[in-house]
Image (cartoon, rainbow, N blue to C red; front, top):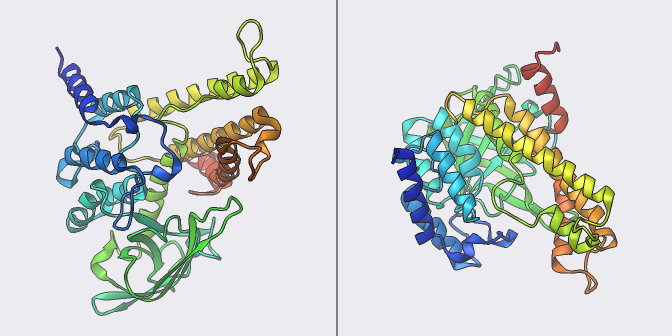
Length: 394
């Protein structure tokens, strides 16, 4: 028996013993395991599953053990992911801590910052949010104006951030601020961390067309942040910020992976029926579903090949823009196809004529439109692909 075979058997035994039955079902949006100091859990098994995984380092299996991970290498990670998918287990923890600031701190944080923050991420103790975009600085993020002025051992921060996902629930923020106002705009930016309970922080949720408020405005008025919370070097925050965006884009590009859910074929059969041969009755929808499934498969294999060829398996590069662009287009295409399948039942917003799943799908279709904006617009990604991957001239 090889070491990897033994590892697979140990992993399988542990999952079978400790993954609760309710954590092997499709995860509803109101049971997301975000963690955090103020989080309540609708399903007690969500917290139990998170705690059990955190004890073993399984909330961040590829992270080093000293920071709360399991220290898995790439081969072990592949086995872990396969075994998790086999039982359709929900992720034990999600959020920007795992997908964004955690990896950035592993690469750019000092030892004190890693020791302070990474174990609190893997344990689910802290919910993180991102302070990047501003009312006048979206795609041109480097034009940001939120200022950080030196005052003894602290920075005093003033400004406004917008589209701050989850800020009304978050415990900490990672934030881009301008520390050198006279430097070229990319060179005068610093990357800082601060507790959201710090005096001077005001958060206002933004009501969206979907009826939800996942985004917020965040106002920073004389917020005092210790200089020890500066990540990397002063004035070099753009380097950290760009890398973190690559981690974010890799995460967004993975939309649709992970847990098994109802397939497009299932929806098509339910709404359109099957012909005498057992195929979905509508030939055009059948062809569209097949094309989408083939593209999904090709995309998944490409992403897997990229991961296997990566030197470290950890830090993404310009390819993250390709995966982000194509992955989000696939996700938007899935919801467009779902609405075509559902017909008039996709037009409901409320009322007894529509099932809860239909109403949720319509809202998810609206939400999917943001995929091509968040984490850098599709236009920005295409520019990066042209320059960094294809080597085309400016």
